[in-house]
Structure formats: C-alpha cells, structure tokens
Length: 343
Image (cartoon, rainbow, N blue to C red; front, side, top):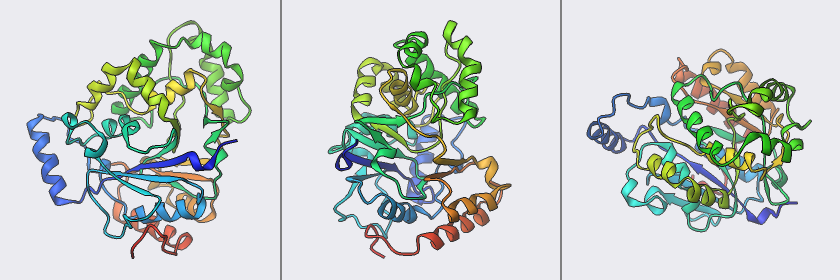
C-alpha cells in the first residue's frame, strides 16, 4: 500500500491573457525566428483553476503538497500561505540558461529539480481535474506508479502532427535502452491485464507481432494525470541527457523535442509500474467538446469518472460559450471556497 503522506501533486499553469507575458513571448518569438507560432489555445485560461484546488481539497485531502508552477504569475485569489502549497516559479528550478521558456516541455522535463518534491508525485496539466474522491492507491501501489501498458498502431496522439513528432522522439529514445521483446516476456501480466479496457487490449494484441519482431509502433498514452517517481526523471536525465538538454534549450516547442511522456514510457518499459484500471478517466479532446458539450457537462455533474480532462484546442469554435458552461458546471458541484483561496 502507498503511504499517503509521501504523495505530492504538481500542476503547471499560465495566464495567456497577461499583457506583459504576451509582450515577452512575442519578443522571443521574433528573436528566435519562430515560424509556426504557438496557438492561443496552448496558453488561454478557462477561468476554472480555483475549481481544481477545490477538487483537490474535497477529493484528495490526503495529498502531502501541491507544487503550483508558473512563470511568476499569481492568481489574485490564491492563498500563497497555505501550508500545503508550494508556489514554484520557473526560475526556482529550471537552470537559468534555458529561461524564459514558453514551452511546456522544459517546464515538465525539469520537474524533478523542484526543491522538496516527493519521490512519488502526480503531474496534472491545468485541464485535468479530479472529479470524484480518489485514494492514494489510485496513483501508487507498493511504491510503484499506477499506469497502463498498451501498444498503439503508431506514435500519434489526438491527430496532432507536432505531438506525433514528440512521441516518435520519445519512442526512439526509450528504444535505445529497452527491447520490447525482452520487456514483454519479463512483464507479461503488466502488458496483458484485465484491468485495461478491451480497446487497449485489442490494440496491443494487433500491434504485438510488429513490435515483437520489429521496432516500436507506439505506446498507449492516456491524456490524464500521470503518476511519476522522481527517481525516474533522474535516471532518464542521466541516460538521455543530450535529448533532455536539447529540449530544455528550446524556448518554444520544436519538432526535435522529447517530453514528459518519455518518463512515462521509461517506467512502462522498465516494468516499474503497477497496472491500473483504465475506466476511471474521461478525456475529451478539443475536437469533441463543441459537439459533445452536453456529454462533458453531464460527465462533470454526475461524477462518472474519477478524473476528467477537458482539453483545449483550436477545434473549439465557440470558446467563450463553452468555457462559460464549463465554469457553471464546476460552480454547481464545487460551490464552496477552499482553503487555497483568499476570496
């Protein structure tokens, strides 16, 4: 069983509407000759961050610490004196030669450097919310991070070419150190496990012959909060230092980047994880939110899954309307101010 006192949560956030931040970003985009500039969806704020903290307090009161990462931006309502809150600026843990950064990849790859971070931690993007009570055992069992080992037909994710490049880089890096055939034999019950959905198992079985005799096709990635060991980050940085440093040196996302999924793949391929049920998470890509907004709202209000991800993206055509309805739903289920809020 996991010791609940040893589990931290980590969340990274940015307020893309901040005018000073926009000016700094534009300056570095010009200096770095960024041709394909990052879309506004990567940075815009839905106005629901306070509900993330309310959910943590209500559904995971056992968490030891919340490490809240920003470039220095501080929500006015946030109680920075909260005993469980560690307000972390990029400059507090990312080496200065890589700052400022406007890419999530260096921000995430360097998380292990945060002072006081527990060996066991769960990383959340700011679009990933607890939506029902969770236990430490939902994230760690016997000191191992809970995850799912599955194969995918290819290193793609949500149809994004940019992300496809990154996941391919992650796969190429991890394949230097782990051979699928050996890892599958050693950890057979972690790859073929009835806790996984039938869809994931089917994909694994279909992809198995190709991966067993040839290169990796892709590893299943669930867009959700991920359980990590700090020691995994340290090991990856020791073994794949060049890849991690190159990515960290990029102020904006680059097709040569690796990202935090490299650490997740590393844990999976090494067998250093505990199989978890995959029916506890609901994830909605931006291309689905407009057409399935009623379903998303119903998901939030009826707490069908323990974790829900409402992913932003340019596919959302009516952002103001959609975000207002999402906020209204959260205000219904989490109406009371948490101790993380001043007002």
